[in-house]
Length: 126
Image (cartoon, rainbow, N blue to C red):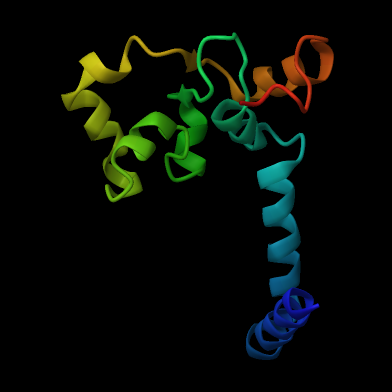
């Protein structure tokens, strides 16, 4: 109950400060992060076992430009204090640690695989 009260109070404060369009921003952010939108594939790449080898995969494709390099997931976990803008540089200077790890080639492709591949399910997690 406390969580609901805090969330509603926060939403009310945001609407009072910035107007009702900020709620649209919150809803769209949820859509982009957790739906079948192409950028939502990052959740599957980061938290699902796809090929039985690793439990997390980095993605180095162009959608990183729209998501603050969230695809550099292994790099982020190795060095969580490095700014998102420097994660590509980290991979550049330490390729021996990242180039041979399993990678996600396509977030949208991974979403389709999750939907249509019977081997993947909500239980495909470590």
